[in-house]
Length: 235
Image (tube, rainbow, N blue to C red; front, side, top):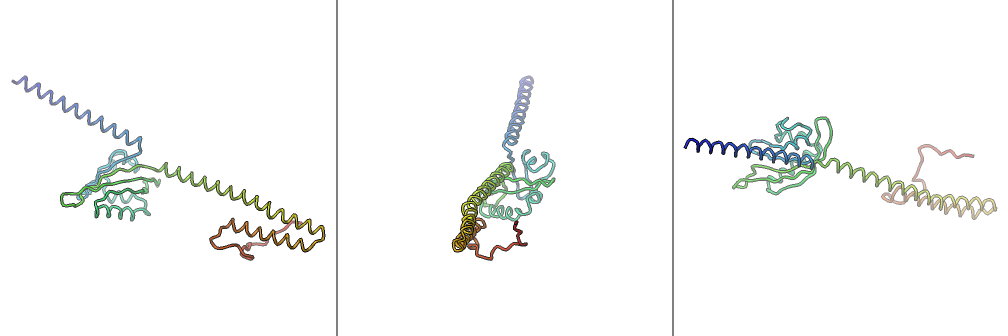
């Protein structure tokens, strides 16, 4: 009987050791997957203000796992000041409705670096509908945001270059050629033609300038464009 009990005890210890090993392996695999996905998760107990973070969520916020106690006030203090009120309102709405939420938030690490997170959360209530927990995930999308900003900046530069090229073509076609025609008319001693070419050229120039500055304030009229200092014409 003693031998049988000893065998069962050894078997139970072996099973416990195996289960603990499997749990550690699972946790390591989850942590590795979250690192690869730049994602962390949290579980906040509202009554005790106890916030449990995954190791990767600590890293996202710029800390080593377990380095800080991530209660709600500490979390909120790490949210970008311009986003704090919006985040609080999203959480309050979730408490009131019990509905899940998704949001983009900026955080500020202790070294001043700003990171962008795509976060979601789900409120867990008791039998009376009272919120007791909030669970969710946060994905660091900073690289994606910066890449999108760079694409937009590049597109803006391309549009600006296209605008300059188009303006140069229009200046050549409408202004330079118009002034050239006026010079020919002047050489032919035809003042009426000179005046007409100059008038057409000025009208074309005003149209080009209107296109360049936009139409939000209406077309450019004579006298609208005044230089800070007079231009100097060569001989």
